[in-house]
Amino acid sequence: MPDVTMKDVLLLVLGIFFILNGLNHLINTQVYKRYAAKRGLMHPAFMVRSSAVVLIFGGASLVLRQWMVWGLAGLAIFLILASVMVHRFWEEKDRDSRLSEGMHLAKNLLILTELAYIYSSL
Image (cartoon, rainbow, N blue to C red; front, side, top):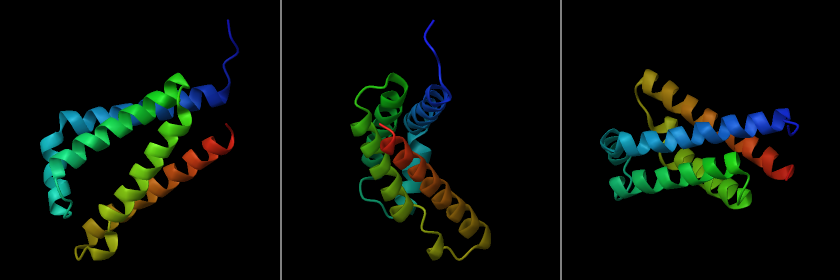
């Protein structure tokens, strides 16, 4: 039996997280499309579906340990774009919406930091 390290487990869990998130984008496309349109994104249905592909591919690259540089790059680009184009907490007037969007932005930046750490250890 091969030795399984903590890094193996963490990459598996993170990969599954992204795959499930991408599948959620596909299953709930209409919900995400309305949200993307509300945020002013052009071609919201296309944006939601293409982000799903990036999330699934990026997650699979972590799980399978194949094309990880490309998967990490795609996930990083997605997180950066989602952070600045979608989770613009500074534009929110409602306190609850501002807090929610701020937490989503913080979560994305934290995950982006984790991806950078993974990249540095390749």
